[in-house]
Length: 372
Image (cartoon, rainbow, N blue to C red):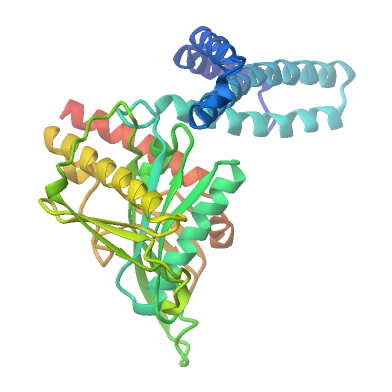
């Protein structure tokens, strides 16, 4: 069936019109101009932390602006390519145009998804915690597989990631791991990954080669910002210090630099061990604790704690996505029904389509709840 280039290009232009409206390019240009002035200040690097914030914000704003304006140019170039192919009746040129149409359609879809991220915390960076659930050593190994999946996803997008705490399992894999993805909209994108993930495979740890089902829980929270006000009285916090440990429980630090922070009223526990000093680990733990308390506070105010953070049990009846490696190959999201027959690609970080489907599903759920 021949491609209706005219209709497809018109649809792309319509979508980009909505993207430009939501992005507000004029405001973005003004922001870039202001940040450029700040970055040109001769005393900028007197405060290194502020300087890094300014330069990072400028880089992100420019990238966002270019992402939109370059897409407009790509659509115009596509239109010219189609006209050339038609005028010369050149099948190769039209085939090239069709391939480019597919790439542009995918890229515009990703931009459109960004415009759907309008939640209170969607613009924030994200803190992700993965915990092994039911399934013994297979679950711990699965937790490590999920960590690699998210790290590879971030690597594909050139997103900076910082692993903040790692608790290794005795035989293999991870009991838990916490990492930070520090880019705008990381929370908006990754929040739909929160829930219980289920793996079915022939266990590499079973000498009888039996099929094993294991679970891991993924929790995603928005990163606290300086504008947030979450005051925690000192008498509500219990702080324990210990030595950082590596795989198999081996000590990787000769000093008690790791920190475990417990919020006594709620029982929330945060541990950090990947910073170089106890002071840095304590600051990181406090920031994550504040983030969790902020999210809990907002959830209680909205009577939606289950929707925002949830009680993730990592067991049967609670899963949101299944990864099946045996007796067939499939990854399926049980909320959106989005699926693929290529688990290898998924575990290698190819999860954008799952994230996009999750965001669209969340928007539809919100609409249905509003109309109920």
